[in-house]
Structure formats: structure tokens, C-alpha cells
Length: 448
Image 1: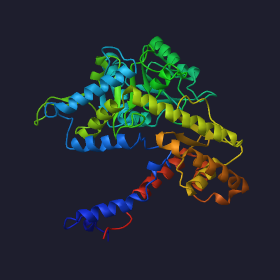
Image 2: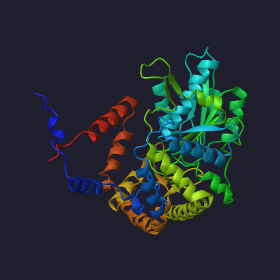
Image 3: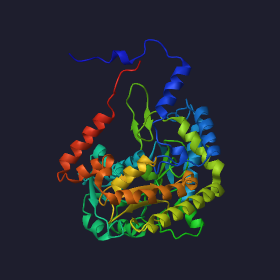
Image 4: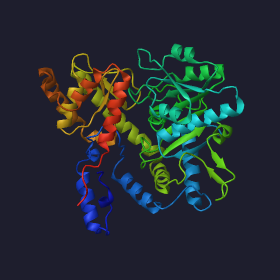
């Protein structure tokens, strides 16, 4: 007989103190991002910015940007966020955009806009395709899956950039969109955006630049006299750019911006239904209800930090990145992959099992992202890492000899990756991942 879940819903309300006690207890298992123990997921700019986020998020926590007439404050914040971001990325007078819930939604919107534009202007295309380098974010594959578009992945060159010959060779009569990254998440490498723009213009197709990671770093690096490859609207051929406010914009989750060079393309992002009994329905993005908290918090942080604040944070992060890279390479056992431009990079090795190294570092409290093809560890450097960089390098130096001693440490996640590496069949890998997700989100036991 199947068990029912009726016991999970509380019969009576639970006291406030008990609720917070249970939540704080659960939080103890979370990674210590406040202390710089996580090398991804959280982007923190300090206690003052955190306080502004909390206060503004709370102030507008019941706001809904679905209806700009009911919440003109949120419309003001959103349009000003878009204008500020467009200005930062050298947009033109007619550049427009929308605030979304994150990079995945921004990328999905870019794909939808190009798909619907093609439906309008190139109806002969019945099986649209987008071309994305192997390092491009999986959200693009997700968008293609949701929208009935074929995603064509192309290989990288020896520098982990999009291979231009492969991109050119993949374009056909069904191609509607090219995508480049600035930088790509896995290795922190910026694709050859200028060359991709030239190709897009030649073939008369759209070019989207995923600057979700770099949009609030690369412009300030340029101001700090770093060498930054072309990536923004100054490159002819770019039709849209995505940039996350909740990454190096240092705002609250989830807030991102999708920008379009001209308004006509953004119109294809919108959804309108005219014959619904509930009235004329219009939606700018995927979500209907759009929480006001993230929009208000993003507006507040952008204004609080300003160019001076972002310059200061970027300078601090890049100095810490330099120290970390030098310390990692000094071990003689690890190497930085490719030529990362900013504070995102990957570390590989021809001498060590980096997955085992990551497990040993996890024992010391450090959460490192694990990558594949090739095996590598992933680093996203943020301001909290400034205070812990020396401790991290000391723990790294102490862990390397243990990895060299043998495979006895390979009991945790490293063992899982080693097992996955023996799977030649991608179907087996997909089944493994699906089973993992099923197990991860299973409710273990009923609450008291």
C-alpha cells in the first residue's frame, strides 16, 4: 500500500522561534560562502552591500513587476537598470532590454527572440538551428530543448576558445543564431567575439554574447588598463548580450539583464494573448509574476557602488586572482588552462588526480567545482577570497603530497567522477545524472 504525504503539512502553525531555530540548524550544513570557502555560486561584495540588499529586497518583497501600472516603482528601477547596463556595455541610443530571473532565462529569451524573428522574416526555416561552442553554457541547450530549436555544438581550439573554422563550417540555411561567451564559464576564456561578429554579418544571422559572468568585470578591467578582447556592442554583428546582476553585479539572486541592439528584436521576446477572458495579457519574459525584491535590490546596488565601487572591487578581485594563480602554478603540479582574462579560471594537471585533490580540499572546508573534458577544478574569485587566499594555498600545498601517495583518498566525489569516466555510453551517463537528481531531491523523513 502506498504511503500518503498528508502528515507533511502542519496541522497548526509553528511558533516563530521554532521556525527560525530549525532553519538556522539546517543552514549549518550549507557551504561557508561568507568565509570564502566556496569558489562559485555566491558573489558577495561586503557587509554594507549585503545590508542594502536585505533592506531593499524586504521593502519590495511583495512587489510584482508583472503590472507596471500597479508598480511604477519597479518599472522605474527596471528601465534604469537596463539603461545603466546598456551604457556599461556601449549600447546605442536604441538599445533596449529586460530584467530577468537569471542567466538561464536571459539566454532562453535570446534564443526565443531569434527564433520568433526567423519565423516572421524567414518562414522557409522550419527547423531552426543555433550554433554554440562546446564551452557555452548548458542553459542554451535547455533553451533549444524547450523552444524546439536544434543546438549544434562545435569544438574548441587549443586555447579553449570557439574554433572559428568549426563555427563557419556548421552554418547552414537553418542557422538563426551564433553564440559566443565573454567569458565562457568552464575556463574563463573569452571567445573570438570580433571574428564571430564579422561571420554573423557575412551570413546575415544573429550573434548573442553570453556575458553573464564578465559583463560587470570586463568593462572595469578595461578602465584599469587590462587587455580585454572586444566583446560588447562596439563589435558590429552583435545583436544581443546577457549579463547577470547577481554575479559580479553583486546583487541579490535572481537578477539578470538581456539586452538587444535594437527594439524590433526585443519585441520577439514578448508574449501577448488577446482573447483571454481575464483580459489582454502581455508578458515581457518567461515568468508571469516577477518578484520586486531582486529588481529593487539590483537598482540599489548599482547606484550604491557606482563606477568607483565596481572599479575597487574589480581591482581587489584581480589582485587576489593573481596571487592564487601564481601560488597554484608554483606547486609545479598544477596548471591554469587556456588564457583566462578575468577572475574565473580552471586548473588541471598531467601529474595529479584533481578530483581526489578536490576531495581532500573539501575535508579542509573548501568547495571546489569539478569539471570534465579535460578534468579540472573551477575557480570563481570574489572579494571574500582576499582574506583567505593564503590559507587556501597553504592547504593546497599540504594536500598535494597526499594525492601523490595513492588512490586511498578516492572515496568521495572523486570516486563518483572516476566511475563516470568509465561510462562510454552517453545514455548511461544521462541515466546516472537523472537518478542522482531523483535521489538528491527525495524527502528523507517526515518532520516532527
